Length: 108
Image (cartoon, rainbow, N blue to C red; front, side, top):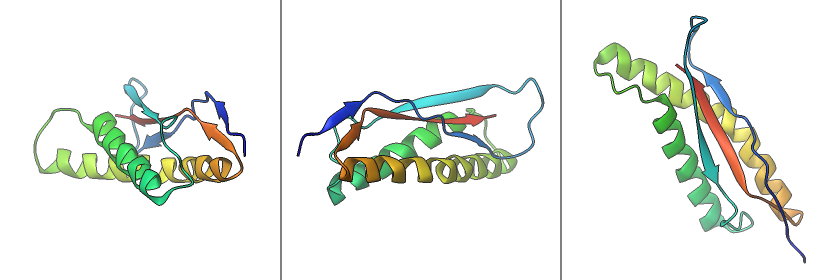
Protein backbone atom coordinates (compact mmCIF):
# COMPACT_ATOMS: atom_id res chain seq x y z
CA UNK A 1 0.00 0.00 0.00
CA UNK A 2 1.42 3.38 -0.95
CA UNK A 3 1.61 5.88 1.89
CA UNK A 4 1.08 9.52 1.09
CA UNK A 5 2.48 12.18 3.38
CA UNK A 6 0.56 15.37 3.96
CA UNK A 7 2.12 18.32 5.72
CA UNK A 8 -0.80 19.57 7.69
CA UNK A 9 -0.87 21.65 10.83
CA UNK A 10 -3.98 20.91 12.85
CA UNK A 11 -4.74 23.70 15.24
CA UNK A 12 -5.41 22.37 18.70
CA UNK A 13 -6.18 25.31 20.92
CA UNK A 14 -7.16 24.72 24.50
CA UNK A 15 -8.60 27.27 26.85
CA UNK A 16 -8.40 26.06 30.42
CA UNK A 17 -10.32 28.99 31.91
CA UNK A 18 -11.80 32.31 30.81
CA UNK A 19 -8.92 34.37 29.55
CA UNK A 20 -8.56 38.14 29.30
CA UNK A 21 -8.43 39.64 25.82
CA UNK A 22 -4.69 40.28 26.10
CA UNK A 23 -3.90 36.64 26.91
CA UNK A 24 -0.91 35.11 25.20
CA UNK A 25 -1.50 32.05 23.05
CA UNK A 26 1.31 29.57 22.78
CA UNK A 27 1.55 26.59 20.45
CA UNK A 28 3.89 23.66 19.89
CA UNK A 29 4.37 21.50 16.82
CA UNK A 30 4.15 17.75 17.29
CA UNK A 31 6.04 15.95 14.55
CA UNK A 32 4.40 12.71 13.43
CA UNK A 33 5.87 12.10 9.98
CA UNK A 34 8.39 9.70 11.48
CA UNK A 35 5.68 7.61 13.17
CA UNK A 36 3.77 4.69 11.70
CA UNK A 37 0.43 5.30 13.39
CA UNK A 38 -0.81 1.87 12.33
CA UNK A 39 1.55 0.43 15.01
CA UNK A 40 0.65 0.50 18.71
CA UNK A 41 4.17 1.49 19.78
CA UNK A 42 4.10 4.55 17.53
CA UNK A 43 0.63 5.50 18.75
CA UNK A 44 2.08 5.40 22.28
CA UNK A 45 4.91 7.67 21.10
CA UNK A 46 2.32 10.08 19.67
CA UNK A 47 0.54 10.10 23.02
CA UNK A 48 3.82 10.89 24.82
CA UNK A 49 4.63 13.68 22.36
CA UNK A 50 1.18 15.24 22.78
CA UNK A 51 1.49 15.15 26.58
CA UNK A 52 4.94 16.72 26.43
CA UNK A 53 3.70 19.44 24.05
CA UNK A 54 0.69 20.16 26.27
CA UNK A 55 2.93 20.52 29.34
CA UNK A 56 5.22 22.82 27.35
CA UNK A 57 2.51 25.18 26.10
CA UNK A 58 0.79 25.31 29.48
CA UNK A 59 3.94 26.02 31.50
CA UNK A 60 4.26 29.64 32.54
CA UNK A 61 7.24 29.10 34.81
CA UNK A 62 5.21 30.30 37.78
CA UNK A 63 4.90 28.27 40.99
CA UNK A 64 2.26 27.81 43.63
CA UNK A 65 -0.91 25.88 44.31
CA UNK A 66 -3.15 28.06 42.15
CA UNK A 67 -0.67 27.89 39.26
CA UNK A 68 -0.39 24.11 39.58
CA UNK A 69 -4.18 23.87 39.36
CA UNK A 70 -4.31 26.18 36.36
CA UNK A 71 -1.53 24.26 34.62
CA UNK A 72 -3.21 20.88 35.24
CA UNK A 73 -6.50 22.23 33.85
CA UNK A 74 -4.70 23.68 30.84
CA UNK A 75 -2.92 20.39 30.09
CA UNK A 76 -6.18 18.45 30.42
CA UNK A 77 -7.98 20.87 28.10
CA UNK A 78 -5.16 20.81 25.53
CA UNK A 79 -5.11 17.00 25.50
CA UNK A 80 -8.91 16.87 25.23
CA UNK A 81 -8.69 19.13 22.17
CA UNK A 82 -5.82 17.09 20.71
CA UNK A 83 -7.56 13.74 21.14
CA UNK A 84 -9.95 13.92 18.16
CA UNK A 85 -7.20 15.35 15.95
CA UNK A 86 -4.87 12.49 16.89
CA UNK A 87 -7.62 9.96 16.24
CA UNK A 88 -8.15 11.43 12.77
CA UNK A 89 -4.40 11.19 12.09
CA UNK A 90 -4.47 7.53 13.16
CA UNK A 91 -7.51 6.80 10.99
CA UNK A 92 -5.86 8.48 8.01
CA UNK A 93 -2.68 6.46 8.57
CA UNK A 94 -4.73 3.27 8.56
CA UNK A 95 -6.22 4.44 5.26
CA UNK A 96 -2.77 5.00 3.75
CA UNK A 97 -2.27 8.74 4.34
CA UNK A 98 0.48 9.79 6.75
CA UNK A 99 0.26 13.27 8.27
CA UNK A 100 3.49 15.11 8.96
CA UNK A 101 2.65 17.10 12.10
CA UNK A 102 0.02 18.23 14.55
CA UNK A 103 -0.03 21.47 16.51
CA UNK A 104 -1.13 21.80 20.07
CA UNK A 105 -1.77 25.14 21.69
CA UNK A 106 -3.10 26.83 24.78
CA UNK A 107 -4.26 30.30 25.67
CA UNK A 108 -2.70 31.42 28.92
